[in-house]
Length: 83
Length: 478
Image (cartoon, rainbow over all chains, first blue to last red; front, side, top):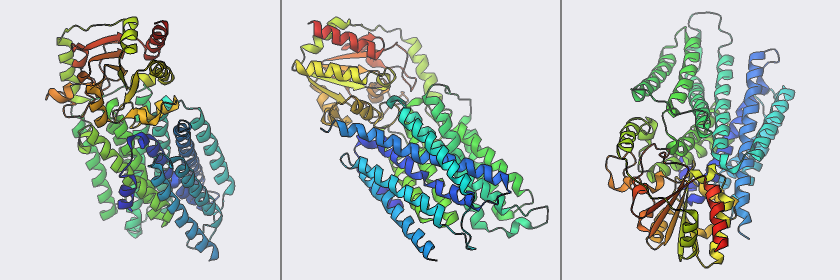
């Protein structure tokens, strides 16, 4: 997997470094799955776990959605000038 | 059972979309599709988790209200933030999102630790019963997530100017010591399982947060791209540790992929600046270099030669080849569209205009490319460092717009300079150099730039956008 990561990013033109970093940033938002599991397992009376889990889901969702949308916005610009 | 197999399949598909997406992101033509594919995989993985996940005891998830509420709020906030942010503020945004991911990972560890230890009421030997491997993974997620969160917040504050550089004597040693204390504490807890485990756990959390702050605090703006990239890969590792915790393929793949790719990107960047990761990690840039360079700057009351925009307009209009070197000043002034306007005007008059892009110009690698793309500058006109240096020897006029450290000749000929050895754009090889700057203040690395006193150099003080508008006006009047 590590080699895969290196292989995937090995030959990237520097123009794409920012979108790539931003895209990778969105992908590590996958941590939200952990937040959902933690949240979904919490006993209804355990307010500490519920509140922390709720916060974790919110933060994870911001990471995922914000990450992908920002990346798309950047790449949209590269598209335009292709015409 | 059916559901569990389906879930596994969806996770594997999600993992494949991440790999594919990242791969496609590294090619200009497929990049946008790659991003969408990864986003699709992520959505599938999220919903599959909500509806199909079962614990080892076969229980499905509950608290759907909380989960969907959290998702809705996070989605809304993330979406609006991402849509509203200005292109120039992109690095801050990425840093902020990265911090959210790190905090998410740390919170998961926190909850899982509380869950693991909730039966503890003081009975002796309780902590010895905990699974060591799980504990280690929880600590890993906690520490890396916290460092990533705290560090990203500082990086965010520094980029938008609300946090200033801050260093104190012996900070490197304090940083290393902090890291050592954290490691020793974790090893101690896992090996000895003391009765104070809970207290130590929170101590580790606090120390990791402090380390995150101290880690980014002394690093100057020039190094910020490297730091964000590094923190990005940190969060990847934190996510991967969550993957170990839940034996979750999607989290594992996504996390490790980003961890590896982010680390490589970081190494590529540090190479472009001729520094080692360790060097950046200890936070070396701000410290010694600034003091020495500041003194040199104050001592040399050298004179600079200014140029009027009318004169520059003439030089630009009658040259064959013009190279523009954009820097952070251009981003701050929001002058990318005005730059493009000048380019169009000059090209219409038969001048060849190219952009020389230094790999670390701006606040993130490729920052300038994104900005210029926003202004519809054509892709082939953006020239990489090595090619640009060939181009520069034949250029009639080089227009440096808000760039400083990346065109500093001291990097090549002054062994005492903190940026000595960093590859730079050799603008002084052109026939004439015009530097557009707001003032004589030094760049983000905080060092003096001999280029400004060079025989071929003319200075044009002012906000990049304002200066460019004047230039356009003057060229039109010719």
